[in-house]
Image 1: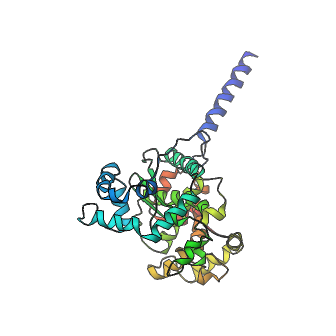
Image 2: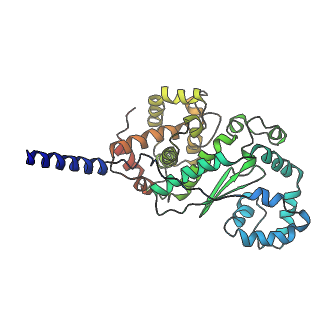
Length: 338
């Protein structure tokens, strides 16, 4: 009887070890959460007395050495902080009427940034869990004059609030050239977190493909969405993809036909960037897949390939997926056949 008890306990220990060792890294951790630092830079900039801005500009450069060069060079494009005209151009940006109106609207729409901050914190905490060697960025919000929605650089994740004021924002109607409807539809605050995290994921991946063709670019874009989905499992797919429910339904109902078209047209190994962009860049639809399809529909197909690849290779970590640059290997390993 004593031996039976010992064997029973030993069996439980073995079972526990097996269960622990089989823990899927792809399952998001339940108890991983840490607040990220959020700097509301638009408030700091626009609430500075314009007559003191010349002197304050130097202080900004000292206070935000990682962000400010990114802001002035890549986002509002007035040049480097060392440029002799820098203070003058920054003052001109702040006092531009259309820019200031965007700031005022952002103040109204984003009075409370708590929910967005919590979601960003949750997603970035999960990213730190999956990629422990990564740096958790400081998040900066700002007004860009409708330039890049999100930018990511070492230690910095920037969000342009004037790109998320709402699909029906009246100020968007005054912009020339007009903002297309398919872009305005996703210019809502509900899309901030998925856009920001996907940008962070993609910026942290060293994309050095064996061959920079359609297959590689499609799967690299899809890989970014796949990892973002794991960071935000609670997020609705319409928000994750920026698709309408009808567009998602189209993808689900036409997966086989889209894949068949890609194969028949010999697109996988194409290096024609103009042709590739028609399938993976945002647009009102993917012309070759009919007007009922969403833009970036090929990336959705790529996501299915990545998902199959990870399902068939359960021992692979997300770090290994992110480091993979042989996309033919991924396709072969997925054995994708919709």
